[in-house]
Length: 250
Image (cartoon, rainbow, N blue to C red; front, side, top):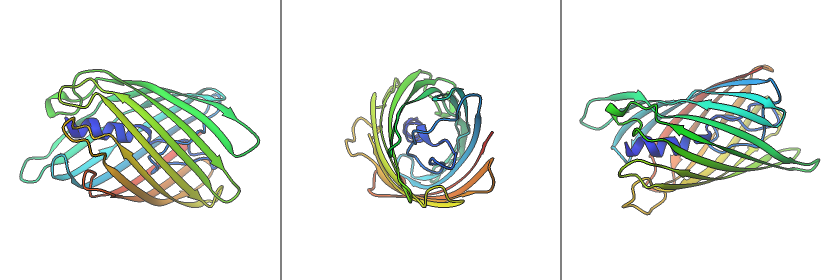
């Protein structure tokens, strides 16, 4: 259960708007872009983990998300999670995690580089409790987003808070991240990112910290594909992850 909650918090913003002016999966850091009224985006994100410290084995995560522009600057978002855990010396466990239902509002944008947004919502107790994926209690989360867009690169920064209501889990979870992507508005882009978040184990005060990098290729106006890697910056985080995804927007 501890791994599930920590993973949900970290994956809260895996799915990003993929318009060429904004960031995309496999970022953890959300960008301030929205879909635009009556536009839709479907994102499929995958991660394969090695050396997760919470159970000492390998894991797989599939996190589909769909976003719909209910207004030019407001998105309605639903995200789900399917997980597989293979602890060392124990059987593999698979199940569905809690679902996220969010609204995202891009509330500030100028002719200059800066744009601001906020994303907030609830964690619905849809998880497979029998396998430890869920916990049977709803939660809530709030994300503040800032983006600076320049001719050759963009910078994104996030601060998040989540309220978790599960026994044995730290009830208040914080998350901070920053990402840089370049070149901006190009068919092939790369990025580098760093993030840290509250340890979900209330007995451990050390925040897991990690870094990511990868490439994003815009195949055409409707499809982006991406690959990436994640590595830990301290021993509280998962040792290594492979990342891959595809995003359709129309």
